Amino acid sequence: MAGDIPAPVVVRVQTDDFDSAAETARLTGGHAAAAGAIVTFTGLCRDEGGRLSALELEHYPGMAEAEIERICRTAVKRFSLLGISAIHRVGKIAPGGNIVLVIAAAPHRHAAFDGASFVMDYLKTSAPFWKKEHFADGSEGGWVDAKESDDRARGKWA
Amino acid sequence: MTRLVYFAWVRERIGKGEEDIDLPASVKTGADLLRHLKTLGEDYAHALEHETVIRIAVNQEHVEHDEPIAGAREIALFPPMTGG
Image (cartoon, rainbow over all chains, first blue to last red; front, top):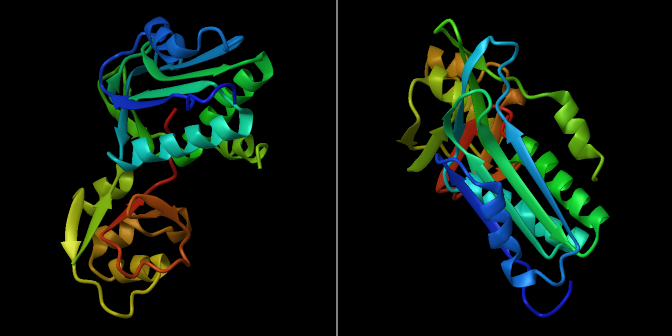
């Protein structure tokens, strides 16, 4: 890791929307010269072909933040990141709305891409959040099932 | 007393988000806990029907079903996670 300043790790769970440009500026503020690459990932709520009116995100307060922070700190070490932010929204989110933001800053692009991808792959399978669907016709759908493809995506980092 | 917390469809099927219960001394692991809870009523039996699907966290950290839960302040039961 460049310099003696610990890489900033920013983790938040919130109902409010986030501004990825503002979060990027906040993360890289102290490392503007060292970071040659910033990868920003935003996960959005799909409308599933017009069927969906909202996703409702539930989380385990305390553990959700702690688990994301563990994942982020692992990513900082593994990919020598200069900083990482992970912000996850909870509550009802309409199609097109933001769900999750991950920003990885590194000296070079590969570490930034890998860092962001690693955090998302682990977040999806290890951070205690659950999605419930609400349909456009007013009915309450079911809880979203976990996907094997997400487990496989995480497995590739083992 | 041990605090139990439930999330997502585990919470809905059991019908509450949290409770404090006295665990018998025979409950030593996460798997023991699931088996014990299933004896407490139909709601529990339904929620925990597929034991291997249920994820367990002790004091807000993931544990495997065969790990000891002795001395836990808070034990959480929930379905596989679907955030992100």
